[in-house]
Length: 281
Image (cartoon, rainbow, N blue to C red; front, side, top):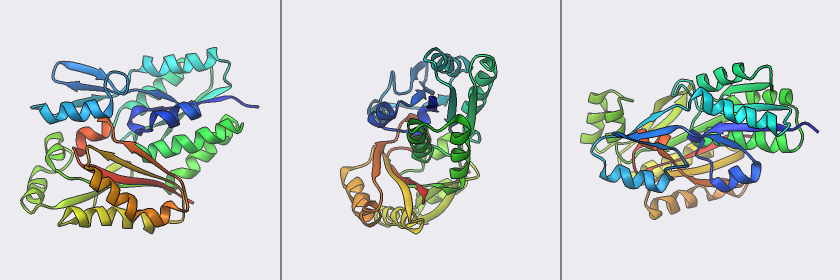
């Protein structure tokens, strides 16, 4: 039976218990608050990140893992007598992580075969791909089979989220300042999605309640689903419970992974971000 190590990066927002159960290797990005730098998931949990954001005068910054960080994971897989490695990275349009993973793969080409997949996704859209591939790897699929599987799923992956504040997007330069400022004045609650690997507006709602309902409606519109995730960052328990209830009808058809959004997405989405990710059946 083929033994393939599945690797992703910490932008995936996968819960620790899922990572451990499926033996997924997660290469962390870094987060910098001023002069202080932290390794995602190792030095800073999502809860600690959000607590720091609340008191920070400036937005944190994120940076891609080094080539060496990926290379160490590949070499560990070779040491464990794995037959190969498949890597599923955050969208190359959002981070240099895929580039680091690819360069590291070239460095170990004579030691172990490594296939790098640019998911063109982020958060649990990326995470669900890693879960799907890891389960297939555990069942004995070869590296070639896993690559075909992963690439075949890319067009079936989606994500939608609503933001509670536009402050982080404005400061992070991810949207035009004037457009975002207008949204703030009108108390607009924007919906965002990924298109071609980049963040795009997916609609606007006047109230938080309508925005939460719209998130659920977008998810339901893609049913039937083979996988579904609910992710949130520094949200109220009431908002999370509302979305849980709104997706109850589609959640009966497929198990839901619920997770906290970490620093990589949270830096730009801001507190109160909540959304769904899925893979269509």
